[in-house]
Amino acid sequence: MIYIIQFIFYLLIFMAGAGIFSFLNVVIYRLPRKISFVTGRSHCPSCDATLRWYDMVPVFNWFYLRGKCRDCGARISPRYPAVEALGGVFALLCIYRFGREAEAIAAFVFLAVLTVVAFIDADTMEIPNGLVIGILIIAIVAWACGLVPGWRDRLIGFACVSVPMLLITLAIPGAFGGGDIKLMAAAGLFLGWKQCLVATFLAIVAGGLYGIFLLAARKKGRKEHFAFGPFLCAGMAAALFWGEPLLEWYLGLYHF
Ligand SMILES: [Zn+2]
Image 1 (cartoon, rainbow, N blue to C red):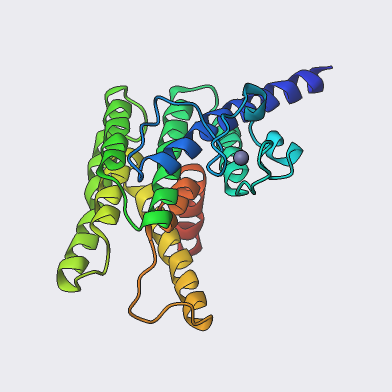
Image 2 (spheres, helix red, strand yellow; image 1 turned 135 degrees about the horizontal axis):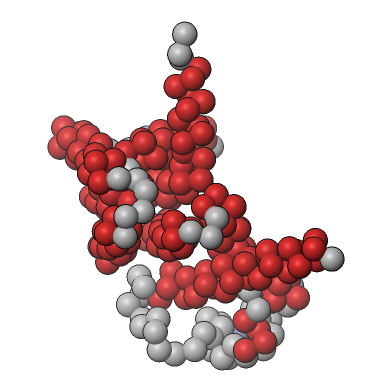
């Protein structure tokens, strides 16, 4: 019996996270197109049919409709249920990692903005300033509420990655985008320097592997760029949950 109640509890957490992230799909689509995402109900981009309320059950609905619009049969990108499922997984991981504490809510809100940043950057190669300001506000609120990490860790986090990125970009123009630098300043203030460093390390490894893959596949020339923001965001999500154990493992490895 207790297992059934636990299962229902975690299913509800997953569905709540997925429901919130289904709204993020709207933001990711509308923000770069300058459409208001507060007003107007969701509709199919192909036939304009307004989605019915029962079409809005996150994740499961896409599978139920086999990835097609109920009205016109147009293909609906699997990215939509994927983003929703990500929200569900993030909600569960936040509860798992931070328990029923304020840190769990702060982490989830932070991850929500990171997800929007990652997808908009992948789509448009730009990170809207409004999203960076959003992260800055989350960081300041978390700081004011006395959540971990402490103010020293946060202030060092603000500069420890953003300043080197800025200096490298001044020396080698175009090395990093201005959006990436601002993102790492704001996010560093939220994460603190330890997680910020781990996140950047993971992003450089993952982005480097992706760059090698692109070169090997001859999809891009040597001088062309790809969006680095999604790698930074993924690195930060990983660091948020596993940054400290990773760092301890890494430092322990060289502790002879
Ligand atoms: Zn349609």
